[in-house]
Image 1 (spheres, rainbow, N blue to C red):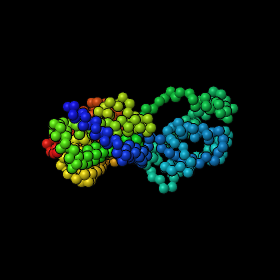
Image 2 (tube, rainbow, N blue to C red):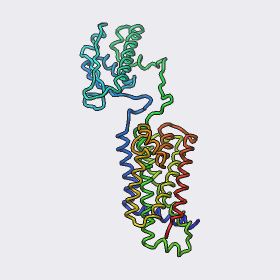
Image 3 (cartoon, one colour):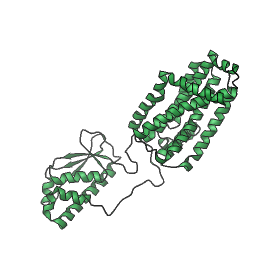
Length: 376
């Protein structure tokens, strides 16, 4: 197998010498990860969403500032009118602090932001009520423990709010998993799509060009066996895929903050098995199609279709039943299942056993077909 190793290492050097290859290996996937992650960023932590509430604070007193801080503590993002994305608003009157200090009721107006929907209204209203209850509780505690003079003392408010709450609410999904969002969705999706596209395009087009230029015939003349040629081509493409995987996982972890954590070995194994599938399909395309242009067109079209149907562009949790069924007829669908289990849902090796087995079956079948159809 020494000849296969030499062929693979040489192919990797040839691929990396092509300037355009760097664009498709690193620049384009990175740009797509950013833009798709930003577009699908979702509400943040799906188990603990922080909806935006637009606040018009007409009061300059201490108690209005305490109320705003309590809104943040209760899980809301306080924004101003210039910030987009708020569905509800809160209007604090100019005499809010003054009326509370006089022990008079103060009216806080809760209103709908123009052009917004009603999806988060109930959640915002619930957390607003919790913030007001918390404010009243702190008022009572300060008056009973330190006297009314403490109500105008910012340090006293900080001390009472800093005390540990004896009651803690833990919220998490029960039975139904959250929809993958943000960079945790875009990183695996774009990585799967570009692995499939790059390995099939580079592998198939290079193989067709080497056949046309007589490179493969010269290799056979040097007593390189057909099986070694196929293994060498697969090995070179796997090395190319490993370079792209390492680059994007490092960027995803340290730049985009994707939580790979303890599941990193399983993520790497899943991507390498998928890269084997893509490499075998690339060798198969280069073995059956003679023209480089046709190989490129066929592989790009097939890769885009498999990415779209396999859940690389949108979460399959939001797709109709027929699309979820179609996704699992493709290697991209199984790869995305495994990666979401590991990255978005925090699962371990046991959850990806079936997807890895199916991907290995895809890789074996594609390798056998590529070996049988290989021509010099």
